[in-house]
Length: 431
Image (cartoon, helix red, strand yellow):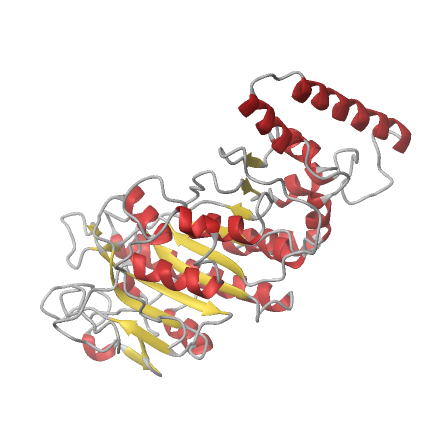
């Protein structure tokens, strides 16, 4: 199946492809596959609570921030601090203490990030684009457009912040079974190359008829902009079978069936895209963190499930031999309020944290911080040491560091959507 057929079939399947609105973008041409670095952005949708994760606060502080442990019970793990191992994060979850113990040499935690908002849409946008204003693309879109312009599989998403601002296509490939079936549309059983609906000769005639019809539609369009758009959508390289290559790189069906964590299943598709050099960036997501009621009962097991998922994502990356080529970034809309509300829930709070690990990330470090009231501290931009006359870390600092790490700061997509000229270079990832 060539890209034209992929786009057509995807429109009526479980695969969604959002084509760029800037129709003059170059069509993706055959050539060497992209070799990295690749980026996975994991979004904890709803606004997570870092005080139960990487920025723990005890219940006996000036504000009753949590009801599960006291300040003296906060566990040190190298330079990190975590809630004590006695807190129950669910039978299928992973405790922060265990997660940090396992990844302490690879992990970078940034605390006290000021999103300046308590709005879900704005928070999601600012965390992954660096800008509060609407219209800015997420980091994954900038990266995919810079590294493989015109590539329909460059940016794979399963949620989170998906805005592309017309820089690149957005492809949703969350269902592995659907991916396989769309990759092999002439097979009754996508795993069996001999299980065909049509003979090869008939299938070739069908494809040729489709190509002729699309060419006729394109040639019959007199409006220049529409003509360019149809050319970009339908006259891509032929006979490339990108989706089939992606499907062939997926794990066995047994491995897929055994994966109970949603992040792991999402990662299987992303890692297959990385292995084939087709995908550059992937959004993974897990929801449910907007716990305005029964915060501890709902939030803590979700946090454990998130950490278990990140652990499985990294296992997928490692098993694929890509540990030295992938960056994993984890974030959320914002944080949760220090105090509980009348429903024993927590509301929206503009201060949050992020976690990073992988290629080019100097691990074993904690940057930034908050006070006992879970308010962001200020830090010297040159030394990253606490400084009352310094600055608060914000998502734009994160995005600048990500663009630098990926080598896209001076690319056309990044220049088209620049960050603030005054944003400081904090050298977050490589001190």
